[in-house]
Image 1 (cartoon, rainbow over the protein chains, first blue to last red):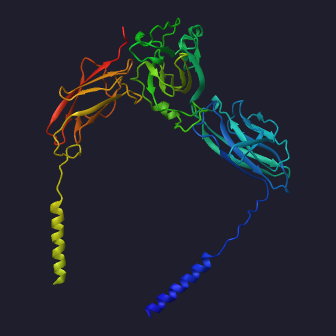
Image 2 (image 1 turned 60 degrees about the vertical axis):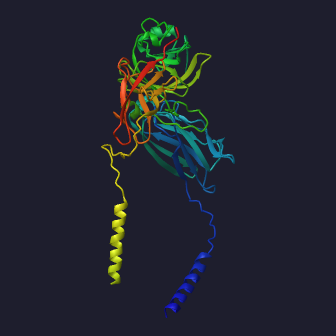
Image 3 (image 1 turned 30 degrees about the horizontal axis):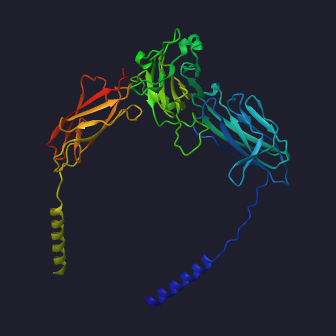
Length: 332
Length: 136
């Protein structure tokens, strides 16, 4: 009896498996939704900060039979800097994965909180890129965006993005320094000065770049506070009034991609954030850093404790006794 | 009767298994105390605040004199150095290194003791640190 039952069960199971397993599902071409559609993603990564664009991709489409795109706009909760804009191009990727842009709108205009474009090309689908540059006024606040678009049949769609916290950090990229020339660095100004200009900004000079080749020791590229002991700034003549101190701590393997945005290659990067500057303890740090290498950096606290900063050496030139550096700064 | 035979066999096996597991003692750090009597430093490294080496050359470890001579680059921040000892198998170091160490008092070299695997041999090493100087 058991054998008969097992046999029957097995046959039924096989038949069911055959019927369900061999069922072929026909591919159905998706039916596009009717009406104006939109979608949005944030393309840029990392902390949002003044002077660094936040990039969004806004896709809008309507069926050809229903109309075409007329305009698109973005309303921010906090007005961006004047560099805020919507790219005139609609982008798609080619077979090699490269972005290909086609001009589809008039140049964008900023008015108050709103950035707007009108379509100049008859099109029923586009992906626009919006670049929002946070202003200093938005620091420590959260910003949100409402993306919207209109079509020729009178329809309007919108898409909310955010909120996004704007950090207190600021940055300055690619500051060229050279021994004996543009070598006096101000964290407050995020600039390098020559001796003459440094003398007139003496109260703001926190660092001096120098390069020395000294027999018996490895000195090379150095960042020192003007108040550092003379043995760490051999042969350096300080301009009148330049005498500030600073806490300086060498760092390695902190490669912030926001300080090296155009780098290529398979490297490991990090993002320094407000919290890193708030939490680092520099009280026991010395006031000099010598033998600096490319892609290394120093943490700095100004003597008035007004700023903490990370100075990154993008490149160094031994023969030219020069370097290119970038600064990320946090106002305490 | 057969049931009792199996129970008896099981008890015997349990006794055999537990009797054969030898207990190794552990020390106050939870480390195994072994029979090894060696206590020496194999090599020595010293890192700066950026966790990069600050040595100018390989440190000289003298296992007879129990000294480690190391020269660091000119300008090294001596108050924040991270020494690293490579020890013989099963040995341990005292005091423990848990972070940066202040070497700035060069007149008073720091000392660490290597303790053998059996925890009975103790050898104290002195780290003599010098700073690279410009050639006159």
